Image (cartoon, rainbow, N blue to C red; front, side, top):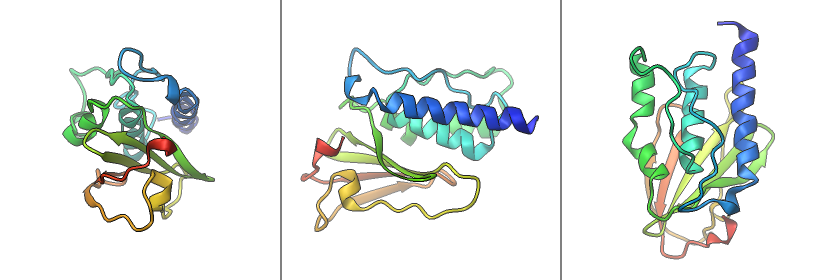
Length: 173
């Protein structure tokens, strides 16, 4: 794969995520923002970048339109595109688009409320080197004294977190 093409596709995906984030307040049942079809499995990005792509598209409730040839997808692509927990975030009945809630250079925290007083969180390192991504309770709409039940879907290098709490402050979303 041409390194320039790889870089270009990843930049395109991240810029579409940023553009889509600006329109989050307009999305909801009957009118979803559509940043574009999924590029997962088309070549041009690393597995980690595909994971990020699918995770963010799921969180922002984008239509999960598979853009690769399903007849020839490899096992990694199939595994990414069929992750039931990630798809459940996308299909959650509350229907509120997640958005970027914290950004520090290449380190970002994206979050969105789910039904049942839950919140989904994506910790996203957009850089090319290893980094620690930290989210505080206030970043995702929780008071610092809040106790939660958390479920982690490490989804390899991406982290999706579902939290349940009755005191979720949805004003951050």
